[in-house]
Image (cartoon, rainbow, N blue to C red; front, side, top):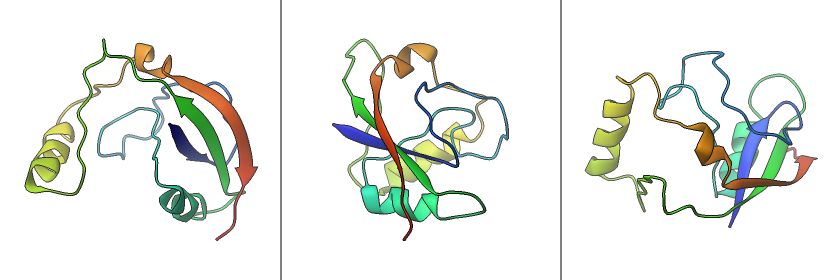
Length: 106
């Protein structure tokens, strides 16, 4: 599966950075499988809209919560995560392999 990570720079080596605490899930490395969404996110703010492509290989040893759509359960999960410091782990990043980056304007 291909996942997209939006940045204003090329990101070949994902890492969890403790920069701004403004995300729903605290610090982490955020990706989406929705290319159109990635293009929208990339074109917000100043700088080059870069989309980094990663292939994702599932690791069954990780606890993964997946939601098919925006349900009440999904919203409850986001609200609960906002009260936590972090649930991301470095071992989760081992599931990602950098493929390429490109500048994409909408």
